[in-house]
Amino acid sequence: MHGNLATQQPQRPEKKVRIKETKKVVVRSKTLPVQEKLLYLFTVVICVMVAGLIIWRYAQIYEMNQKILAMEQKIKEIEAQNIILKQQVDKLSDPLELEKKAKELGLSFQDPQTPGTAVKSQKTQTASAQTAKKTKDQP
Image (cartoon, rainbow, N blue to C red):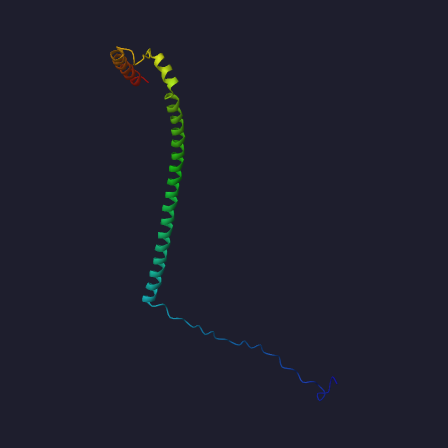
């Protein structure tokens, strides 16, 4: 077998590696026309303006709410002061308290039915008015 050509197996030819070249087809889309670009730009600008307007309004609402809260706080403080002042008015308008204050200032109570009290009461009123002016000016 080794020497017989009739029985010899045919030699296989070496396989050649073939590289198949593929061509890619690139499809280029046309660019957008100028009018369409402007339309898109205009749409984006409008959306930004609307969003800005909405944010601005919310900012105003927030600011108003802050002012309302501050005013409500001031109202509560003033109402508390009013309650204290009303208590002082009630206390000072009490007849016993007025009589006590009059005695401290040196005033005396006279019966209006006795004769001559009108002249004395006018004198005491002018005297009390003068002392009231002095006490109001002084802190």
